[in-house]
Length: 169
Image (cartoon, rainbow, N blue to C red):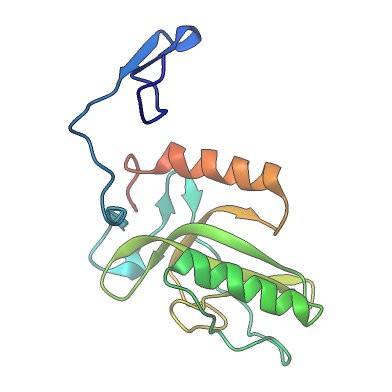
């Protein structure tokens, strides 16, 4: 039965054997909490070889002429990667979002960047780090194209399978 504000006081999900009870003291925070994006790994990024069963991405080829500059609006790497993919598509380039773990100069972090298809190869472009091609080391956990909900969902499952459980070896 809903509370006066319309939200339920209790929610039971029989298939999961779960029951949730509303906490009247709970409040929505002013802003979302930051995610812990740091990933344990070797102090020397050159020693990185694997993450969550995934091999280190190979060194990328150079970005060919016509690839947009590695810059895009947004407040997070995810927003910047998505905006860059849209900008590349507006120029007739095939692009997608990549998510994984990259070295940010201080350590390994969960990160999102773009990839553009050029000359038969996918070239990583990192608008958050301002790199085209994107430098390593990095480990691509998942990829998806705009509008491909199934691939985006699969990417989410792969990321969740590694989040907090894996470290860079």
